[in-house]
Length: 357
Image 1 (cartoon, rainbow, N blue to C red):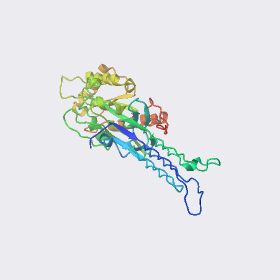
Image 2: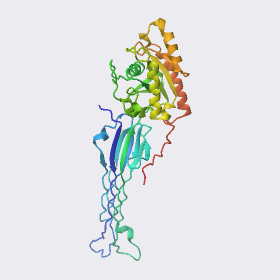
Image 3: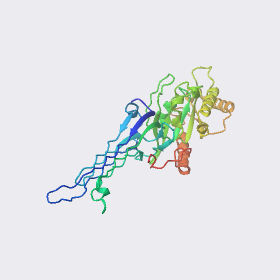
C-alpha cells in the first residue's frame, strides 16, 4: 500500500431540519391547537484515532465528506429524525489544521481519541413552541440552522520513541530489521527506503519502545534534494535520534566525517528544535573493518568529528553490539516518558472539543 502522510479534505455537517406548522384536526375537537414538531439536528463529522491505520491514503482520493441533513418536523407532535454522524478514522499521530488559516484544530495522539471537526446544525422550531395563552393558533416556525463546513489539511507524524538518521545505505533498515519486528526492504543501492517504517523493539516483559526509520538524507535535503526531507517531520515527535554512520563505505573517496557533518547541518536547517533533540552516534558496519583497525578507526572518527556524546559501535548485519545499544535506549526512553508524557513538547494538546462552534 502506498504511504501517504498528507491530504486535504472538505468536511460538511448536515443542516438542521425546519420546523412544521400544523394543527390538530380531529372529529369533535374543533380547537385541537398547534402540533407542529421541531426539525431534527444535522449530522456532525468526527475524527477518530485508530492505531490500525498507518497512512492517510483513504483521504487522498475521497476528499469530500458530508453528513446527512436533519429531517423536517411533522404534524401530530412528530419531531424530525436527526441526521447520522460521520466518523473519519485516522492514524494516531495525525495533525488536523484549518486549510485556510493554518490553525491547528487538534492532534490525534491516543488510540480511540474522538474529536468533533464540524458540528451539525440544530433543528428549527415548529409552531408547537410558539403557543401561549394569547397566541393559541401560532403559524410561526423557524428554519433549521446550517451545519458547519471546513476545508482541512491533514498531516501525519508517526509516533515513535527513537528515530534513525543517516545517509542512504548507512544501514538504518538493516538495524531496524535486526532489533525490531519491522521488515523493510534492504538492498545494496541508495534510497531503498521510500517511506517511513515503524518497528517495535521488545526489551523484556512489558518493556518495549518504537523505532522509526525514514529515507536517507543527503546534502541539500533542506532545499528538496533526495527523499528524506519529505519525511523529516516524522522525527519531530521522537525522544531520541540515532545518527547512523557507515564507517566502512565502499568508495574510498567518501569521508564519513564529512557526511556526518552534512546530515547534522541539514537537520538544523530543516528544524532547529529537531536539531536540539538528544542525539547518539552509532558507528555501523564494523564487521567490514579489520578487527585490528577498528579501535583506531573509531577513535580517529570521534576525534575529527569532535563528538562529545554517547558513541556505540555496532554491526547491524552481523548483529554485534546491539544489546548494549537496546538497553541504553530503553533506559533513556523510559526516563523521558516519566519526565515528559507528551510526545511533542512544542505542542500544547488542544481540548477534545476543538472544532465546536
